[in-house]
Length: 321
Ligand code: BTX
Image (cartoon, rainbow, N blue to C red; front, side):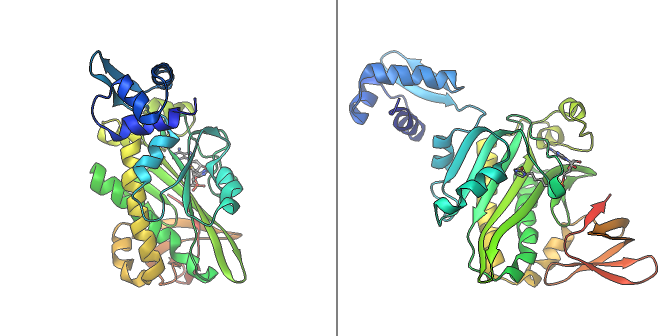
């Protein structure tokens, strides 16, 4: 029904019982329509209380993404206040790219499930239905391409601090684009961009964060080195709440990315990073060395000292841990 959107909005914004009569009059539709929409919403997973003489109230929103509700949650954000939501996609990155030219604005793409979620180098990203945050964030900076080399550093801090500060789980950044809890991966992200010689036109940052998988679910899909926030703190993670704090953190760090040199946050970044004091294998293109990371440059490059004492700079190496 064309009233579904309005009824969801009205119920969700008002945290009190609203009678069918009142809703119908306010939104200028019939009470039968209200009743039909309520039935539809219940089918979609909303828990809606109804008390005779008082009316309806949303008791619990579904664990799946509802575009209306996501957009209400995002409405006060400065930049990321619009979402495209689909129940299932091949990949949110692909859907985001398909919509990049629709608008000059920033937006996010969310899906409950990805059938072709991808990591770097086309590796598979396991995206079980309603178990994690599978999201692409589209940003439109006015910057030269060279500046992009520090983008991931700011974004990884945003994700790291949400997990640590809001969920009280210790986690570390694995340069350049993963978050680990102990030696298990909880999040991976990848940054793609559309650019020309004038500069960057759009950033499409794909973020995958494991929220509610169980260890058995990871084992079943052969991801025994993955973990979820639920496994780590023993509590189910409420996806809307997670999204809301994460987007705020991303907006803040994105603002810093645009306005501050990386050197300003470098010490913080290094302290949240897990690769120091370890001999690891670094691979970038056809170059592979075994060595120890010793520093990050102001342009985001990692300095690694190899076993024979040579210094190497990496832009975005693959690191085996
Ligand atoms: P990555 O290439 O660093 O990591 C991929 C590797 O991580 C895989 O080879 C596998 O070993 C492991 N892995 C796969 N799935 C998971 C998982 N759910 N949890 C932990 N480890 C896993 C990192 O790539 C970037 C991933 C970005 C994913 C997002 S989701 C939204 C967006 N859409 C999309 O298709 N990709 C991005």
